[in-house]
Amino acid sequence: MSYTLPTLPYADHALDPVITANTLSFHYGKHHQGYVTKYNAAIENTPFADTPLEDVIKQTAGDANQKAVFNNGAQIFNHTFYWNSMTPNGGGKATGKVLDLINDTWGDFDTFKTAFSDKAATLFGSGWTWLVKDGAKLAIVQTKDADTPITTGQTPLLTIDVWEHAYYLDYQNRRPDYINAFMDKLVNWDFANQNLG
Ligand code: MN
Image 1 (cartoon, rainbow, N blue to C red):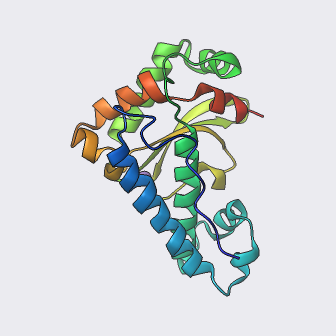
Image 2 (cartoon, protein in one colour):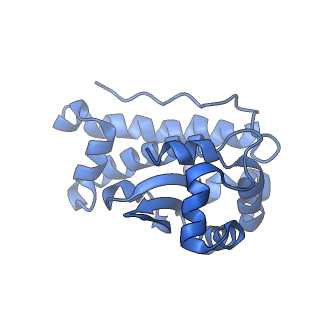
């Protein structure tokens, strides 16, 4: 049984001009699809072919012999989570229970926003920045390459992809401008609240 690229939760031009249809055509249509194609090749004729994606990711994390399965599988999960972390006309201040927990952890929303943006801007090389629930508190986590917080017992609420392929066509080297636009115009706080369960 092979894995299928999940459908985008909006039209490919819906995030324009913050993230253009041109970027999505490569990022979703080529990169995300590429991870799916490579994942299917890596799991073919193995027990992983019949195992749910998140279980495969957890079972192969840190296993040097399963790098292709883990990297491509985790990148499928991370990208699907990223598309859902954004919505047209999103961004701005958090809402609901997530806002309450942000206030508990960082004191106020602006302090959280600065801390999250700094973590995303300072991640060296390729990776992801996440808002996660870790026990009773929230935390901001950086993961390198394909690494994902679902392997460390944390519950992801929100993520931003800071691999260069996520922003280079629209922002070139200006990663902080991409992060600011993500925070101000795209974040899907309803999705973050849903992930609290
Ligand atoms: Mn990406």
